[in-house]
Length: 529
Image 1 (cartoon, rainbow, N blue to C red):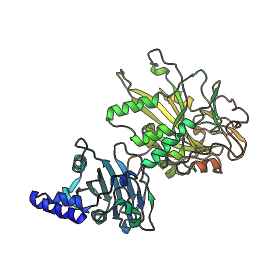
Image 2 (image 1 turned 60 degrees about the vertical axis):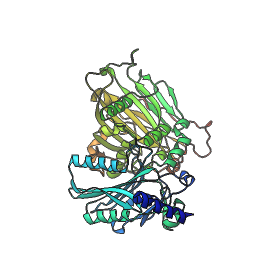
Image 3 (image 1 turned 180 degrees about the horizontal axis):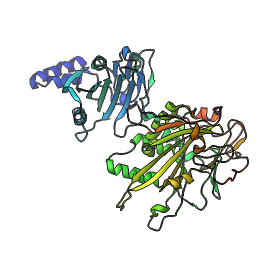
C-alpha cells in the first residue's frame, strides 16, 4: 500500500509540477495522531553526543568539541515551548537552543515569518549579516535560516514547520568554525516515527524535559496546588505565627490587615502597560499561582472609600511563602559568603518575582545560624489617574524554612520609613532538633534583638562582589557577610522539599497536623535604638 501511494504521488507531481512539496511530505513518516497525543513536545532523551525528541521524532548530534552541558532557563514570556538549552565552556561559549511554536492556522506566524522578524530585530540593533534569509531542506522538510555576527559572537538561526509546530533553533559561539559545526550537525538531523525514540537515543541517554517548566511538571504542580494546602497562620495582636512553617513575625502595631499586597500588583500592571508584554510567561505565572501564598499583608493606612491612600502615608509589609520544590531554577544559597550562588539565586528569583528586577542592591548575612538575602531598590510606577509617577523605596528579606522560601516585602515612600520597617523581628523553630530557637533576627537597620544581627551591624565586615548575569546585564551588586562561624546544618524537611515535584515535608517525626505546636518563649520585646 505504501509503494502504491508513493507511485501515485510521483505521478501527480509530474502532472501538477508540485513534486517538491509532495515529496517533502512523503519523506518523513507522519506519526499517528494518538502516538503524538500521548507525549508532550518537551519529551526527549539527551546524551553527551545527541538530542532525541520523542514527540517530533527528531534526532541530531552534538559536536563533542563544543563541550555542551544542559542548563536551566526561566519559562518564556511568549507562546514558545522550550525544548533544549545547552551551553559550552570558555573560550568559545558555544550554545544550542531549540524551541517549538504551535502553528494552527494563518493567524499564527509561520517559520519564515518568525525568522524574518528575528533578523529584522537584529539588524535594527546592529549586526553584520553574513547570510540572509534562505531556504534549506533538513530531513526532507523545508527550513529557513540566516547567519549574523556581532563582535566576536556569530550565530545561525533555523526554523521549519513539523507536526503542527514551528521548530526554531539557534546556534551561537565566539568561534566561527564552532558555529558552523553546530549548524551542520542540525542540518544532518534525522526524522523518524516517535515510537523509535528510545531505540535511536541509545543506552547512554537520559530522560530530558527541557530547560524550563515542562507540560508534565506544570500538570503535577497544578494537581498538587501547594498554596491551597499551606497553613494561613494565626495573628495574635501584632504577631503573626505559622506553626506549619515554624516561624513568627512581629509587624508594626496599628497597621491594617489585607488579603493581598498593593505594591507588587500595581508595579506589574504598570510594567505590562508600558512594555506591552507580560512580566512572566504563562507557565511561570501558573506555577506561581499554584505554589505561592500570601500569608500576611499589613498596611500603614487603611484606604479611603475610593480605595486611595495618600502617598506620604503609605507603607506595606507583605509576607509570601512558596515551596522551593516548585521552582527548580531557584536554589537558596547555603553560604552567605558565596557571591556566585547569591547571584544565581537572585537572577532565578527575578523570573518568578518581578519586583526583583528593579532592585539595585543585594546583600547577604547570617544571624543565629540562618542565612538571609536582602535586596533593595527604588521603584517608579503610575496608577490609573495619576499625573506623576510614584516612587517608593522597596526591600525584600528572604530566607528558607522547612523547604519553603519566605519573602518579606517592605515598601515605604521614603528610605527613612523603609529603614524603620527593616527592624523586623522574626522567630523560627530550630531544626532538626525538637526545640525552638527563640532568636529574633533583624532584616536590616539597627535594633536587632539579642542573638540577631542587623545589616548595619555587619556592614563593616562585608566583602563586596559585583556580579553579572550570563546574558551580560548587570545584576544587583552583592555584598556578603557572616556573623557566625558555622553555617546551619541542613534539615530533613529541607532535604525532602528538594525532591522533584514533591511538596516539602511539613511535620517532624512523630507529629501530626492536630498535635503540632510551636513551643517556646515569645519574641523578646526589645525596642529599636
